Image 1 (cartoon, rainbow, N blue to C red):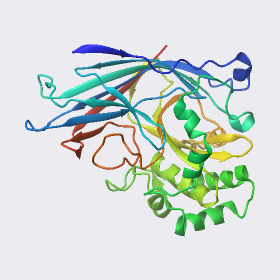
Image 2 (cartoon, rainbow, N blue to C red):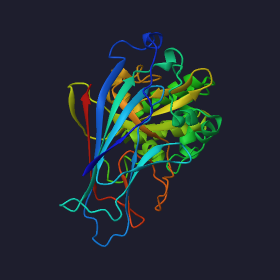
Image 3 (cartoon, rainbow, N blue to C red):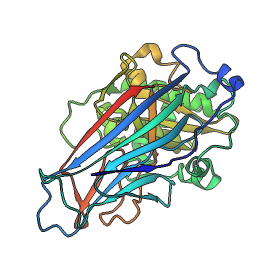
Image 4 (spheres, one colour):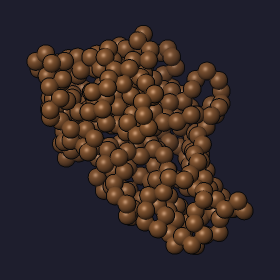
Length: 339
């Protein structure tokens, strides 16, 4: 196994004036090393093609990715999806020898600096020339229009539209309408992963609307569908929450949130699922996010470059294809260490 060092976007620097407007407690800035690993296993010995796509975190207005270190038996290529501009490492293990235990593995480590954000109380994004092309695309008029359209699991009509109309009570202010939708979801949807497999965790807005339960994907799909039905652009963001109770440790799984667009303040974040779990944070998590997280990708129904099995509902875990078919036999491991 050899080591491949790959440069990522230069670190985002913010002036002391920009940081002064951010919350002071909890910490407004946090730096940590984030490690993402995967192991593809039980691949048939006669497989002709083995490919793995991994999302790459990008520097944007609220996080800086200073460098990346990748360990693998193959050198990945960086590819970009044509719709949202998400970046991916594409590992092609075709023809590569597996590890002695018959698996294919890789580990990626990133140095991350994350900034708490409260654009509701001030400018939506600090001025910077270090923003990635992905973030610029996400702020374009053309992609903003995409964030008014339905996704496969996020319809904008029927019960989704009806609930949005009832919850917003005819409010014409973008922020006030979004706040009423957010409050209704926080009050009426329970963070609950006890439903049958294949129901919760898919980002299914109708499921969340009917069952009033689910995980973060379900909460935020419902919010996005309702916001879009009212003509408010809204988008899905997924990454990880990073624990702050100890200096290092493992991370169990992903976390996602949503953002909606206001013409005066730009993109404003919300985290309805965390607010549901911790009601004391309800105001904090409408129009603001803490620094204990890192985002990896945006959007739904993501077209993965060179993939043969179709689009990805959303992507944060490895997406694997064996002989052009989606393959789910893999392990994953995530960890962090404060810098």
